[in-house]
Image 1 (cartoon, one colour):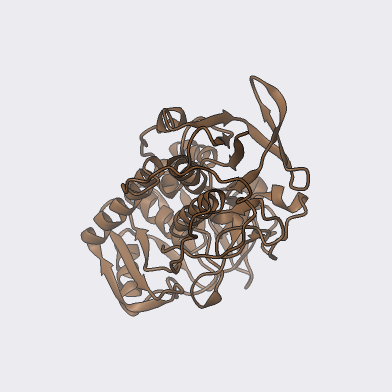
Image 2 (cartoon, rainbow, N blue to C red):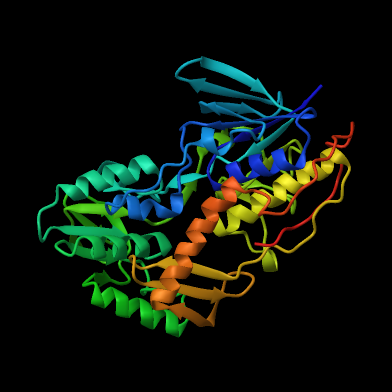
Amino acid sequence: MQHRIIVLGAGYTGAIAAGRLAKRLRREDVAITLVNAEPDFVERVRMHQLAAGQELKPRPLGEMFAGTGVELKLAKVTSIDVDRKTVAVQSSDEGAAELPYDTLVYALGSGGNDNGVPGVAEHAHQIASRPGALRLRERLGRLAEGETVLVVGGGLTGLEFATEVAEARPDLDITLATRAELGDWLSPKGRTHLRHVIDRLGITVYENAAVTAVEADQVTTADGRTLPAAVTVWTTGFAVHPLAAATSLELADTGRIVVDATMRSVSHPDVYAVGDSGHALGAADKPLRMSCASGTPMAWQAADSIAARLTGGKLPNAPLRYFNQCISLGRKEGLIQFVTADDRSVDHALTGRLAARYKELVCKGAAWSVANPTMGIPVRRRRVVAGQAASKGAARVSA
């Protein structure tokens, strides 16, 4: 009987894990099903570009996985029973169905996080998903010259969107509200370059301005300021998909599934969690941040660990660490902030057009890794060995 592997979510991590498993294991031994609600792979790291009016190349999942042995099932996951080892799904053509599994890879990712601030859901736009980015794109297209777009959040997403739309729509008044100082986590060189680009693009920055309420045409900050906004864009972080919270899986305070060094659930050994869904520890035992930089090596780790356990092979053992943070600042400028293994900025950064090209290569590489999950290295498919699925072990993989 084939070992049934179900991968939930075809973002970067789920798609990479499914493809890598297909390369590692023999088709006659395993049945790999990739469940995703939409038919296309979404380059989430480019949602700020889509929202700002750029067209992105379509990437149909059916074409990406053609001939791999991975079965693509277009359906929405409605519930998971990790004790019965089943997944309930709903599709437009087949209706409700229940999928049994032997191994589950949970890669449902995350969405926007309103942080409990009143008015965000009703009045603010988010770009954590393609539908959200498209709604914002349509709204921006209806703005008249001189109207204000307020970006709330000074992290990577907020900076990338603010600079992208300021470059694409110089007729608009772009403002940015951040709860701390602009780029306070960056090195001195990184902060200096960021401020230079922000000033050149004419973006107004409100520092130490934690937003406490959002209305249709303005926001209010913790210190009582009122900031006008024809459009408010909320980029203050991500919240994990809520399905895991309805299961008996052990979760961290953030709602992420607690996993060991092999991305395996500490409470349910048949479940692996990757990307934003997994609470994994990196260098200095710090939880990995929600990012493509974390998710890709987590997917490699999970797939290689599953394959090793099923075939009786050796578990991978390489440290998971960070090297840099890549920030696009429009199409012509960028900032590559080099960091320690545990993601703290060091006094070294790459800036300007070279950094923009570097970031573009990173984005292209991330999409390429989805279609080429073994990173171009030939992999010999190994036969599944009976009784190996529950073997113990731990490993890490390099980011």
